[in-house]
Image (cartoon, rainbow, N blue to C red; front, top):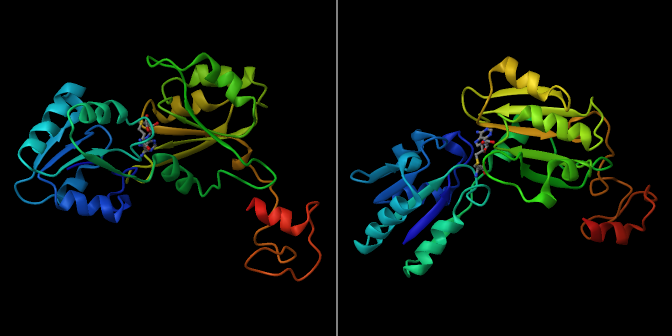
Length: 266
Ligand code: SAH
């Protein structure tokens, strides 16, 4: 069996219990050497073959997985964060499908959530935003026309930019063109959850300068939005004046919606 496993954002104890168990049972591990913490490999059994995918092509990786499968060996394909985000797993799964090789996927803690934790931030803040857009600036990998940052940023919700730390001049220009106030709060989180993690709070108009001053060009999450600011509403769910399926209100609900209607939203 082939197991795609999310390694988490960096700290070796942020892999899931299932991911750690699969590593402990693996005969082959192919890991993304550029971003996966090598300490995780200490959890592999003696004799386990470990390959760094940084120098491998898709074909090389699939060959290695196929050869493990042919020999009845359990293989782990270890991806950074959660494999479903910018993980290039679909092309591997399609190749395995074509060869009739079974696989499963174990999720991981995305660096997005490692970064939110480092900031002590809630990405969906009542009264501020209830939506998160996960995207990237256009570099060598094209971004579809309909998903240009100018259009996405105009929503004014929380923005999380992967793979964009080296493109922040362009990001700043797009955020301004989208109508974001120059003082909209922003943050750059470098190597979230690693020992050398850095957290830089800045604004939508100082992202590029902030990254330059800190010497950050890669392995960073860029977050933009008023969720990083001061103001917000407290939640209805934990409001004493609000009834829902598990709790009855002490006083009249402070909200415009009826309590039942609002509770259905939670
Ligand atoms: N699947 C991964 C993302 C892989 S794409 C995940 O869920 O996190 C690689 C990009 O992820 C990097 O360019 C950077 O934007 C981000 N990234 C990965 N690890 C990171 C970390 N520890 N801290 C901040 N950003 C990280």
